[in-house]
Image (cartoon, rainbow, N blue to C red; front, side, top):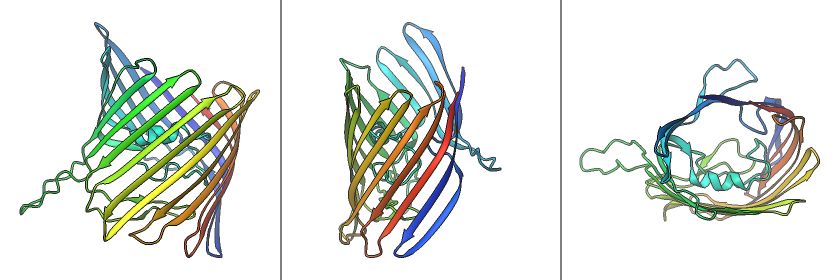
Length: 321
């Protein structure tokens, strides 16, 4: 069994502007990676079969919060057939979006690629094939655990998830794609500058999302791009989100210079489409194999009737163990 984790703290300034009114907060937060600790292990069962488990929890390292949030926890079997894991796991859509984010899913404004994804799926069963010449696939089924309705109402499949992920990784090229469908689920989206996610649709139809991304490592720089679309709802109350994201990571000795630019749009309850845009610029300095100093700034904005904008800047240190 292995104990592992991340301790990340950065001094962060966060400014949200709604119309002409700006609100600014400062303080410490996990920026480059969410602070966490976890346990993982593998047991050899013989005949090429292995049992494995992961139990991972988010922690707050900047205040007196004692509660722990379950990031991912699963148990499974792996062998020549691939692997089957059961429990709370990363979604297939997030696996695509996270892979092609040059700043690695940092907590900062300006990255629009992950706003439509469910990062982790609860009650999930995931089968992943072995790699065949760089190709692999994953099938994910998630149970919404919604009780069957009475009086003939059929709602027991609400929030049930079905997803398929495809991956190709060989040499400098990596390509990933995913599609998912969630039964009777609304679409929520935290548009740039909005403090919390807002419902864009009703929950009377399936929520569907698709994402595809690619990266190519040139040696002197790694280029990446990812596009995602998600929609849900009925004609009377339909919502949709689209994002396009482009990034580059440039290694310079012990320093990695990272940048992304994003654009997209969203539709709230069938109203007119609203355009969005954003950028992030960051620098990571490897003090050692496990300790990184970083600086990161970003901005996201939209062009709604009351335009909103979100600006962040952070400097900090991340240590992994």
